Structures are given as structure tokens and as C-alpha cells.
Length: 207
Image 1 (cartoon, rainbow, N blue to C red):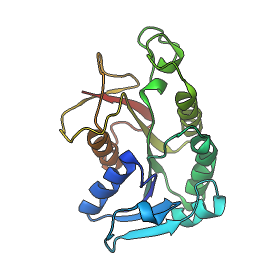
Image 2 (image 1 turned 30 degrees about the horizontal axis):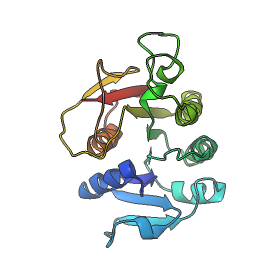
Image 3 (image 1 turned 90 degrees about the vertical axis):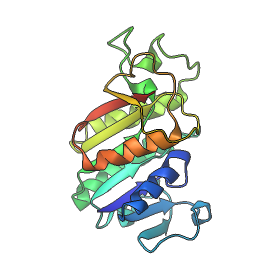
């Protein structure tokens, strides 16, 4: 497979990159700074220095890929919601159907108020909702895209260690789920590329 990985230098993205390379996939990464990538990089990585907010950079990165994984975060910016239309447009132009993204548990349905998302209800313990609002905008764009998307939605995300043992649930956070490690989140996200269990679904993940 030839993959486009966005957010490859981030906490989750760096683990996804490692998993993909271990499986021998060709991976294109679009990064602002190649210095943040692990060195040395194997031959099956194509590094493009650019910005996901630049449409030409995104188009170039999308050429010839089979699927997209986005581990882009919010970091107090609007990069996520502003880049998603460019990513989706480039996917359609290149005929790429599959995209797996990392979201947040805040955009899962609330069990307390089923008509609301978690971040909109008393179920969420987060006082600040800016990050969830950004992920919500990205979710709505994906939902309307007609593409084969999956959004992996972790709850509290400490670095932690890999266990390979966690619970997942479509549209909701698993009951009493409190946290999930970065490596476990990355593995589940990466594995969705070869699966169709959660097409056009948000997936809650927690221990």
C-alpha cells in the first residue's frame, strides 16, 4: 500500500509511521519540518516539506496514494478544520476513497443526552471545548464527503505504553472508559486501513 500520513511528527502520528514502515508500506509524509522525523528514515518513506493549509502541497502529497491517515491535532489553532476541505478535495481529484483520522472522545454521542455530542453535554469533564469544536467541524466535513472515512476517538490520552488490549465502540465511548495510551490508539487507527468494520463511523476507544 502507498499511504499518505498527515501529522507524522505528532504523538500519535509518529507511532502510526512506525507501524506502517514495519509492515513495509510506502509512506508519504507531509511535514512542516523534516527535522522532527526519526532518523535515519528507510527508503520507503517519501518526505515532502510543506503545509496542509497549502492546497498545492496537499495535491502533490496525494498523488498516487491508496489511502490517507490523518493524525493532525488542534494545538489551539484552526488548522484541522481549515485543512480538511483541501484534503478531501485532493482525495476526490486523485480518486482516493479511504481516510482514517484521529479525533477526540468529545465528538462521540453522549449517553446522558443522546441528541448531543459528549463535549456539548454534562458527560464531558472538559471545561474548554475549542479542540472538540475543531474536531466536530472536521467530522461534519467527513460525514458530508461521500468518502470511506473512519474517525478514531480516544478519551484521555497519556503517552503510556502499548498493551494491545482495549475496548472500542461505534459512536460512543466504551462505558467507564477513562484513558487510552498513545501507542494503543495509534495501532488501532493504523489497523483500520485494512478493515471495513467502521466505515463512515466514529469509534470510541478506551481501556
